[in-house]
Image (cartoon, rainbow, N blue to C red; front, side, top):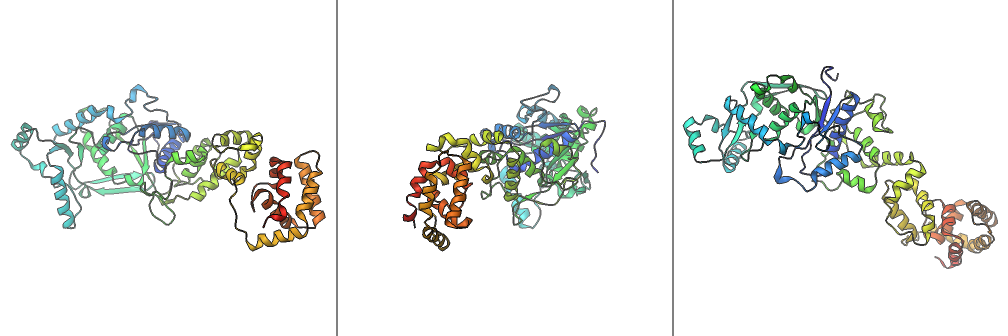
Length: 498
């Protein structure tokens, strides 16, 4: 049963770091948060967590925001659409707040300064691993005397601030996806809440931001399960500060951790795996419809009450998305399924909608067939997996590569020659006065009667002679588009082919 506090508006958030472009995993998290918020008439917030400056990529924020909008996942609030009560929506504008809270915890003896260097920490980590122990901070600096601390401060020794994790404590939460989860404090380490550069750490800043923005539900990937006890520890400590005594209820977050996404074969989807396109911009450039991506992503870990997999709109999805049917089992990223869904959505478009979309992806020169652009584009409509396919399909038509002359084609073609298909086709084609689809169909019917050839024996050699293809779009329409003169010229070579 999904918990929703009637006295507290549903507010969900997607909080990416601009250290990479908009990944399908992030897109699914954003989508689930958006759908959940909309189902309960709540708000969906975009917050940028940009404190990992060293790993930031150029245009990372724009990639996140622009692709969210393209998917139809429109944030109710963001740095581009702020509400004063909740600003700022980007962590780099909030560093003073994290620092203030960290030092308040230090003052209350809930945290301590850590002067250990990177080399010292790495050495301790290696020793733990050598002793078959889980690497944890050894609390060396927790036991420094006041005199030792003051001496280091006097000498300007850099330090971080670590939170004290209490002994013999269990961190528990009722996960909306996985049920009751409990992790003992003995499995944790005193984690850094303020880095030596004065920037708040992820698990620390995250909690403060969620409180300040009055987030109600935190829905995110399974990889964040291990972060949650640290965030609960931070909450327990921060609640003891006077600054927050009147807003303790704003720390009552409901967590939900989505299932991992795996590749076919069972391996976890990794950003470092380049065998599969994993960024939303890739699918945008390929010409997938946004609703198809949404439709595909929502099936990665959620099922509708009637097990429906195809949805016409985001509104149709969020009307059913109460969160209760989110699975905790791994979901498989099936590219064939994505294509299948996209083809279904493409088929739902009107011809006018289809032409508008596909023309934006058309790059190939139609040459002498420019006057028949719409007809050619419509001709390939059922063959497209996504819109950019149009270029390859038209190129194969205009510039056909030589196909292998197999025994079947040779036998069919030789049989057509015996029935004088080339000569009879030319004579009947010349007799057509009005060039139309209807008259071309009549031409083929008469040709079949005069030669006594069955469909395959008739169409295969004609298609190969005219268009150098064994298979392709509707033959009658192709003949009409390429024109009478072109077809007569090709038919004149019929007996010389093969």
